Each structure stands twice: as C-alpha cells, then as structure tokens.
Amino acid sequence: MNHYDYVEWLLYKNKAMSNKKMKEMEEHLYNCQACLDIFLSLINEQEENYAGDIVPSDFTPKVLENITKSKIIKLNTHRVNKVKKSINYQLGYYAAVASVTIFLTLSGFYTNLVDSVPKITASIQEVQVRQNLIANLSDRIIDSTSSLLFSIENNEKNMIEEE
Image 1 (cartoon, helix red, strand yellow):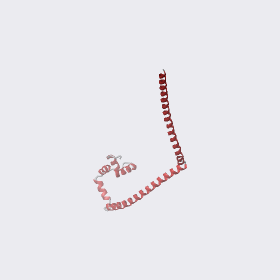
Image 2 (spheres, helix red, strand yellow):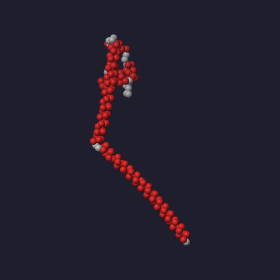
Image 3 (cartoon, rainbow, N blue to C red):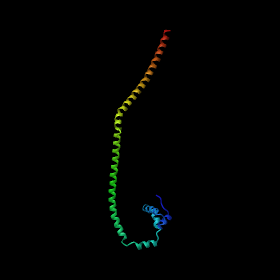
Image 4 (cartoon, rainbow, N blue to C red):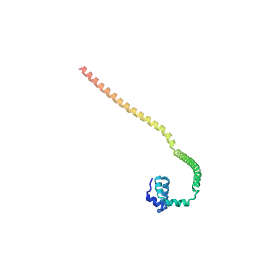
C-alpha cells in the first residue's frame, strides 16, 4: 500500500491537485488509518465550527438510519451476487469440460487410445521376450565356454595318461 505524506494531504485538503489524484487519495483514506490520521490532523477548529454551522442537527440520526437500511440491502444483494457468480462459474466450468470432451471425441483421441492399448501391451511382451533371448544367449555362451574348457581339460588329461 502506497502512503501519502503530510504535504500531499495538505494539497488534497486545499484541492490543489488533479481530480484523478484527489479521487485516488480519497479511496486510499477509506483503507488506511495512518493516512486518515494525518488528514484529520490538518483540520483546524475554524473548519470544525464552519462544518457545525452548515450541517443540520438531525444529520447524524438520518445517516445512521440510512446506514442501517443500506446494510440490509447490501448484504442481501451481496449474497445474491455471490450465488449468481458461483452458478456462473460452475456453468462455465462444466461447459469447458464438455467442450474438451467433445473435441477429443471428434478428433478420435479416445479411439486411438483404445486401439493403442493392445499395441502397447504387445510391445511390452516383445521387449520381455527380447530380454529373455539376451539372457538365454549369455547363459548359452557361458555354458558353451564351460563345456569347451571342460573338453580341452579332459583331452589334456587323456593325452597325459596315454603317455
């Protein structure tokens, strides 16, 4: 939140700035207690007396009565607006989901998905078969090497015994 300093509030009070800037500062006063305190400190006794002269004596009761009425109306209106926004949001959400579903259906996404599941399963099985072939090949090489070495060893023993 951007705060305004004493000089800016003095300019605001004397209406020595653009209407746009004055509107911004006025909106800021509604939300910032620190700036409101600075602005209220600029009001002197003469201005207070002048305000007391131009404001009617029944001003406060009328304002309080209007505030009470307006709070009730605003609360009810706020609830209705909130419910309407919620319904509009949900309707928009379901419309978007339905649109995406229709688009995917028309583009054949689901058909391709159903057709590709068996292909994926077949490729997984093929990979497993290939892995088994590789594993079997290494086992066969080890067995062949062992039997070759065993046969060479036996041949050497036989040759030694014959001598």
